[in-house]
Length: 523
Image 1: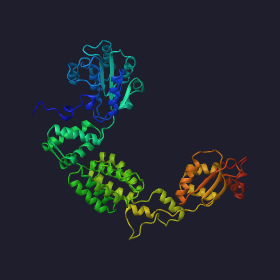
Image 2 (image 1 turned 180 degrees about the vertical axis):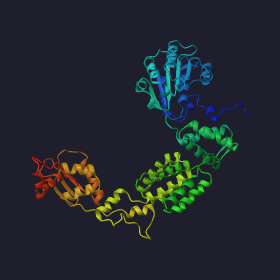
Image 3 (image 1 turned 30 degrees about the vertical axis):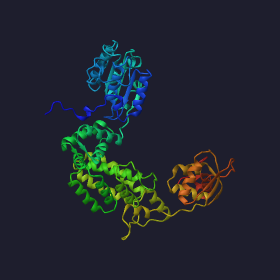
Image 4 (image 1 turned 120 degrees about the horizontal axis):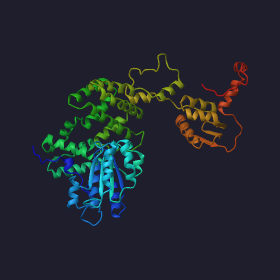
């Protein structure tokens, strides 16, 4: 075993601001602050693992103490005694503290006592507190005063992956920087450069898989690349990475989703068996299916959100997704997404992932084939359903989810009176619009396509919301005109109350109670 071997994540760790990848805003802000001598006394870096929080802290410490200039510099040399000692974690004035193992108030008191003394070899005494959210409440409280007004020679740099666990009193005393996930394209360029430096072969497709599996973390991606190199001996291709990740090829996922949405449960289960027998990790396959559903939804013609060129799919695979989308509704994609999200914790907790995955397939195919609740309500408002519930598809009709949902869509409804409008709103479950309309709107004129009204409360969005709803409900454009003065007409609720009060049976019931009145009318 070569004792001198250094893993890629450490070997290619950023040593200056120029090599810190994916954090352009952070780099620009810090370099400008250093060049203009506007150096804060406390910084806090937050972001997911592997995005450069600790590396940035070390680079900043170098910039503050580099001996190549007579003041802090945004371009530390990396060669002077201070730069080399900081890079090795051995500088006497730059202390890296792991908050996970130094959580108590006594640990913090020792640090603060030492902070009062001037630096020995550098310009600044720099305290880098990693995973600062792990400090105890008493330790945070002990840090507060010194963090707000530290000695002029002390700089605090805090790093955390859990910014929400850091007290607001600490955050308010620091300049906060949120380190972003590193984009896939940036990771690919970085991995390709490292492959060239290491004299190994890395195919474009394998590089793409590694960059996406890294999920925005440089360290995670380099650890995967290191593992792939060890597995292949330096010739990293797509097949090797897929085998390492136990992941199905995206082409396989596209074909599987096509089978799944075809409506044939037996074929879908058989295809799942084949993928499983080929060694795919079913939890990873579920993640890939969710990724497919997300991009298929983004690419659906109903959203008009474009072709999603930045999706992880090839041009041929995007063409296949468009073909599938032609026969699948947006509602179907939304339903299977919800089922898959709910299945994630089930897969994690299941003792047998294959059984859980098979049941997930059956569940998805059946729930996707159902019409939406709004479609069912619209159907019920137009016709009485047969005994036993919703009519099942007759033999010969399409069994695909898209066809089932298209068949469930009702014809446009005609609304020609104020009462018709109230009924339609109530049946469509537009509760907010229904309540406001029936209680506050005085109808002056009403025809099919035009309404003149007075709004007692003057809600500014009412006309827009009702116009959009009416156009969608009736299939044609509506014109709503609001009058400035009331014609003293009754609202729909007041009309119903008057009608009820005139009913002999209601009048008789009310006479039994002194001072009784009708407060509201509901169905």
